[in-house]
Image (cartoon, rainbow, N blue to C red; front, side, top):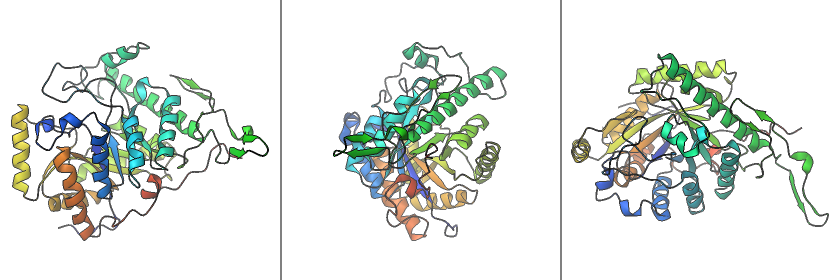
Length: 401
């Protein structure tokens, strides 16, 4: 067994439909009929908060889920369709008190101005617990929903192919610009811009609202925002990364990066590459969390977890594969693995429940108590904001005199 962690772990859960296994919706605990109700999502986030988790992420996209790399599919045996992740988070926020809410936003076809005010609003609704997970899309069919641009087709993600590398680099550069514009808009109101003095009739100090005058290759944004500076100053920015180009986005633009190592050596190499990119971007002194993603099948009896995975694969008609490592075992075995991975320089983990109705409670009621026994996880929430939970200070406003 690994020794107790020198610093406590951070834990997040990635929520996606009924779970990350494609056959999860057919399990008895899955509640597929409730999937498009507010109550379903409220229950999931309440369970994660019961486990004192740092935050949840909520998956989203600009096209139906698909088993294919870039194309829609015609399958009818898997969950298709989603509610809007930002709106789910805003609906759930008043029902929770401590846990962070990090919806996915797709930078490729959405405007930074809209995203900035949506996440700023979420930060107000949640009193300082908002974040976003920025994502790109290279799917031609999704570009066709918007009709503003076409995206050249790539057959596979291969950074050694010059055309693929150029396209992917362009999409991630655009995402970095998107985040920069969003961050500037969050700062475009100084903290004390609102006077709200009925006696003098002055609601706002116009000198404390700022044009951001952002000019990028894909868009320009004048500003200021229409939403005052969020309670956290800067809500959390997160991104998932699998290779050098997205690692660069994490290093340049994010507060938390999600990565997908399959062993400790792989984790160490990824962390080193991200830290090098951070230094190259001039952000070496900035706090940046690196979390590993794992898909989890959790049962007290490890054999039961493995059997459940095999049974779900059989129902699906094919073995489940993932970009992230797939873990099937007991909470104690998972705690061992997390502590081993932590030695590679990871600061936390984002767990993807294979069947959310089964594996989310196994995280909150099985894994968390096991980590607490080892002194490796919090016993109570120690901060009121998401930045506070992650040990990040509230940043100064870049436009304040």
